[in-house]
Image (cartoon, rainbow, N blue to C red):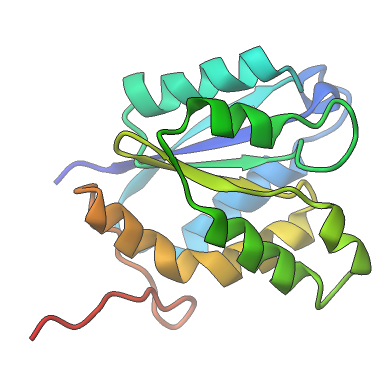
Length: 177
């Protein structure tokens, strides 16, 4: 079986302008590298907070790059330039609201401002798109919460079988009788 391709998208005008090091995108890659034991390949992008650019990037990663999973970071807050959820909704066939609900619930354990976050998730053909917050600490907290459901979701979409280090994260897959 070929390597699973996973899109990693950092949405930030500062990151795309090269003003600071992209710690958030690197944090996603680091966490996924700890979780996954199956072979996978990151398809990494840093783009500005512009809805048309975000939409085009998500479409390219899903339709042309064949990413089974696309994880974004940034652009999920209440600021006027934060349009990642709108771009995600615009390109998805179906939304998966439970992801955002769980991430906000988890983040509320750490900061009361988690209610300001607008993370979401959705499906585009054979790709699951998940929006994460922009802070590396929050990325790990949110991925720890939702990742157990991600391999099974990808299974249900006939995607690649993602194997995990169960000492680090235990994916849920129903037992077949």
